[in-house]
Every structure is written in C-alpha cells, then in structure tokens.
Image (cartoon, rainbow, N blue to C red; front, side):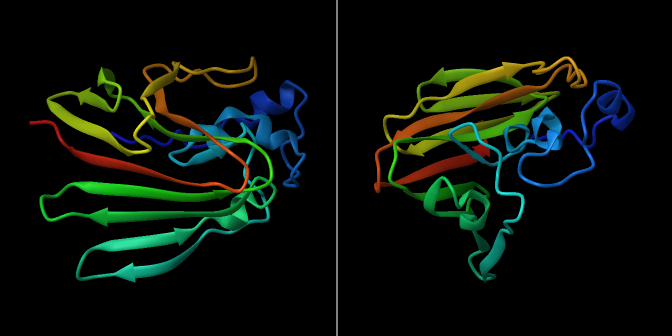
Length: 193
C-alpha cells in the first residue's frame, strides 16, 4: 500500500523549460514533484528538498529481532542536528517505524509522509486505515502523542509540468520542533482486524 511514483516524463519537463540534467542543490530537477522528498515515503523538513550530496547509510541490522536503522542526518544537514530512522518487525507481524530527530537552532516543521493508492480513512487523531481491494492496513501514531494524521494531497499535480497522479494520496504527520529539541515520531503499521 506504500507507493513509489517512478520517473517523470523528461520530454514534458524540458518542454516546460526545466533544466533537469543538473543535480546540484538548486537544480530544477528537485522542483519536480516525483523527484522531491515530499513524493516519497520519508521525512521532509521545513518543506525543503533533501541534501543532494547526502547519503543515508544503514548503520545497524539486527537479524534476530528483524530490525534495521539508518542514519539520515547527511540528507538534512542544513535543517537538523541528527535524524535517524529505525524499522522493526514485531512478533505479531506489525512494523514499527521510529524517526528520531534533534533539531537545529531554529523552529522546524517535520513532515512524516507516505504515498498510497489505497483509500485512507482517518479513524481518530492517531489512527488511519488504508483500504485497497480486499486489504486493509492500520497506521497508528505512537509518538508524539499530540500528532494527528493528515491527508496532504489527493491526486497530486503541484505544478503544470508535473504528470497527473490519479488515485494517489499523500498522508502523514506534521510536527513543529523547537530549537535544539529532540522528537521521536513512532508509527505502528498492522493489518486492520
């Protein structure tokens, strides 16, 4: 139910006057929805693109408990002091995603988002159910306790040069973080019983 959009139509982008062949931080390439981190199942900080020179490294894999963690800090060097993501497969086949962030010297808005072709239904502030065909997934916010699910975009096509994305929805959480403060975003994913 998590979705990746794939590549964009290069001819369409070039016809719109975008120079997509440069890969520096200011490149037109990162204005394209499909290439921006907002169009992926990851974090966006202050609505900015990730650092194009950064690399997220897997820094720990635990086979017995089925967990892996990544250091995301190099992707957000201008925005935060630290960012890490941990995936855990729990005993009952649930998946827990934990993002740990230490903010920099300014207030930041952290967005945890995912793309889906499933139909979302916000059950309550911390629970959303995704339905697709005969399958259902439940996503619950465990932390921060005051966060709420949002539907950011349906059928996103932010700019005229972006391809249409029918049936796609961007859901997630936004959380403001004070300077030099830490926040953990924990989401539990399970079958909806």
